[in-house]
Amino acid sequence: MPPSPRLHGLLGSSVAKTVRALRPLLVALLALAILLLGVASLPREALPDPRMNDLLSRHRIEVAGLGVAALVGVGLAFLLS
Image (cartoon, rainbow, N blue to C red; front, side, top):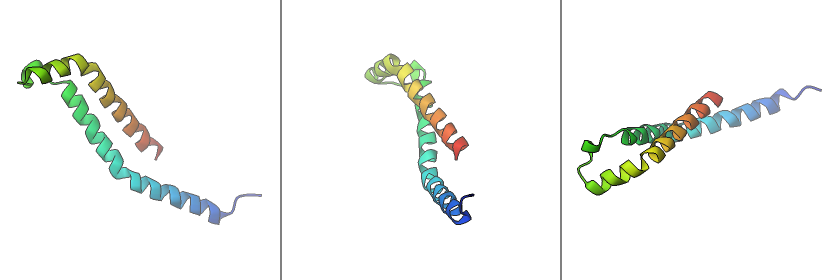
């Protein structure tokens, strides 16, 4: 017996509402990914404070990895929605 069209429409409607509700969060996550990748690509001369320069030089790979992970997550979320 095929599923009722009424139930199918209800499920599709709730998924569409969820996607619309999450879209601003995905845009914010995209902005965060761009910011993290931008910070990871800063040259040494861009940070005048030696402590911040040292911190970024020690954790550059982690910052870039977080940016890439966020970017991939946003891309997958947009593809799946």
